[in-house]
Amino acid sequence: CVWVVGTPASRDNDSKWRVKLREIESVNMHGDTVANDYEFPELHITTLALASQHRLLFGGAADGSIKLMTFPLQGGIHDPPILAHAGAVNKIAVSHDENLFFSAGQDGSFYMFDVKEDGRTAKRETVYADEILISRGDLDEKAATTAALHHMVQELVHDMEYNEKRRGTQHDERVKEQTNAFQEDVEKQAQQFAAVWNAKLDQEREFAEIKREKAEEHSSACSSAEQKHQKRLQELEDLCKNKRIMMERQKVDFEIERKERAEEVERE
Image (cartoon, rainbow, N blue to C red; front, side):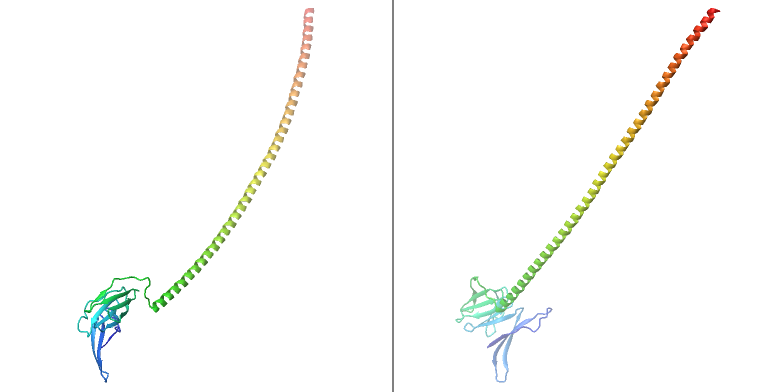
């Protein structure tokens, strides 16, 4: 017998799809085939392996499960599958004595099963190795992804360095602008202070000159007033002296006249 499995040409999300396993029993000279089709609801078979001594057919599925079937495919085809891998089953192989069969999954795990004499299987204790099996395509894909990420990292590093240099340049320019503005402000403030200081000195000199002029004017005015006062006082003193002399003279004349009149009175 020959067994083949295929993928549906299309999957309508609104309808159920089924995978068919075709068992070809014979082919005659005219090209006619004797085949039987078996459907797997909600199960996508990806790989097959045969254990002829045990008359078992192993099928790996896309959901990571393993389907065991007896052949010819009359019974046991609807037995529940064995849940093994977290990803699709990539490959199934049977040992030479058909006492063991192996499965490798897309999740990178590898399992080994014992095949009993009655056709049953028993999963051995899981032992995790230091290495995992991976396909060449996955290696190429991961290498391409790593190269792309490395290129992205280099671009990011380049962008970071460029942005850092640009920020440094902008910072230096801003510092230079602020420094120049500060120096200009300092010079402007210094000029204003010098102008105010010179104005203050000019005002002080002007005030001192005005004070000196006023002092001179006051001193001259006081001296002139003093001279006028002394002159007036001297004039008054002279006037009083002259009046006193005149009074003394008048007094003497009056005494002489009085005596004369007294003598005349006595003579009469």
